[in-house]
Image (cartoon, rainbow, N blue to C red; front, top):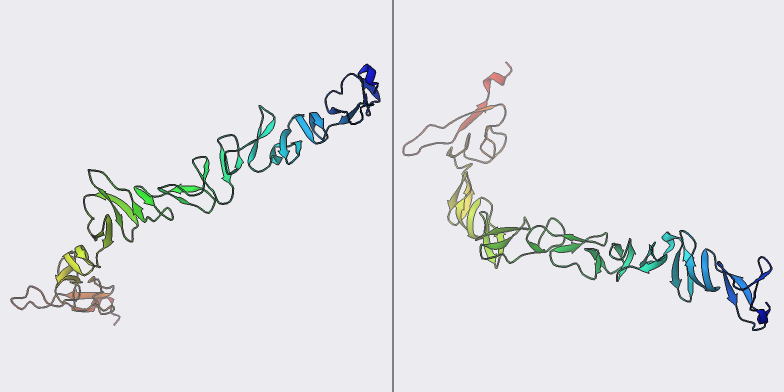
Length: 283
């Protein structure tokens, strides 16, 4: 370049011009001669061999260490996204690894979970962390859970009633007291009653029994097998064995006929006698 005339020498077309133009930058390393050097690939304008200031179509500025270069949209570094308005790879929200815009996070960095388009170190109340790195909602009225089917803590409720945690069902129910089949084992926790109990005060004290059961002391036992045909029983032969005509649930087994036993006052029923159905016997 002729410094006195203020011209730059372009190595590509071997011309001297007052400016380098797009895709070139002025090299002032030697004060005696000014040269136009090529910008890095896909740079529209640049100020050095390592610093682009704008990119060609479909490329975006991204900075890595001491370099500011132009890359395709899919090559924006983790934690950034291609912004068409600015032509740059702009930063996602904090702790976001993949995003579609300033508020559209889709994947968080390790150690964080995606919740409501933000990345959090722990899933908030009423949600739980999933294997895909997102926070999913617990069941209704549940404030702490490990998956979508269980609950370990329910909400506090309101003046209209309480939210009870049901054991085994691992569900939260809104009521003034534990529902049938459960008892209040601790604050807002409902534990299951023993089998055959409709209502109970504890695991060892039943107060009401379900159908076809009766209260024997403080526990409920099955009426089926006591030799008395009661409630919805179709037979009762005095035991709970299968294969003798009267099944353990006091229904008549296939291929049998059961006759109610002879009544002996003051009894109102006697054990059934079951036999093979004569119509099915092969002569």
